[in-house]
Length: 278
Ligand SMILES: Nc1ncnc2c1ncn2[C@@H]1O[C@H](COP(=O)(O)OP(=O)(O)OP(=O)(O)O)[C@@H](O)[C@H]1O
Ligand SMILES: [Mg+2]
Image 1 (cartoon, rainbow, N blue to C red):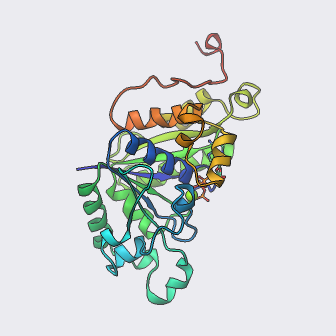
Image 2: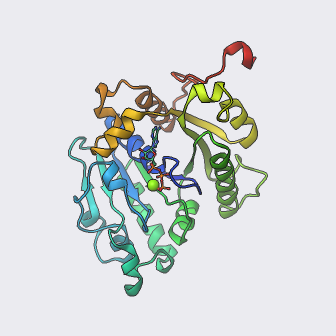
């Protein structure tokens, strides 16, 4: 039985899709069978970030509604044979007319999808939209863990906290109990700029940890090269032979997903001198 993750935050543009794609590839390159699923029905873009634009004929909505089989909707990556992808629909709003909205999906159909994917893959990564819909709420109750993504800005940290509270409420735990639930909730700080943390321009890592009380699962640095590569349909490992700090950070998250321990700030410039911390 594979492990399933939702990648989430109620804040837009914090890197959910970027981390879904790069984490999926990292796990696949480590030998696991991985499927990345674009659940952003209103505004898909995991296909672009994965460099698999136009590679799909059927999509997630077709699967859930039973218009096609999962095999029809799954696309295999051309760079890594262990990586697979299921797209969100291209023209979702038009599907309102034919009952293809997330609110029309039954819990049974979504449960069956998750069950089949976790039976067939070692890791299933659901890239979620910032705005929760019925698909979001159902997935939250079905997966093993949530990776909550935040920048180190006050607004996105607040959104991460709200996301964690909502996830806890959805999965049956109170808002004061962010770590003990059936759903493992982990925080990933993305787009981290050590200098800005050091200068007090953005929130520092230790402040984020003490404020959110969520378990930190990774710190991913800001990377211009990754962002530029993304525009060309390239993932981070394809740039600079995968030696960038961004890649190292994603590798560390993949290692933690595998259940191995990695020192929290391995390879991370926290922007804080050790003597200031202790
Ligand atoms: N670590 C990073 N360094 C630099 N740029 C980044 C980083 N992570 C993400 N970005 C950039 O931020 C932008 C938004 O990223 P992304 O689309 O992954 O966010 P999202 O949370 O999925 O957004 P949405 O809520 O719209 O789905 C993209 O241009 C991406 O290249
Ligand atoms: Mg996204």
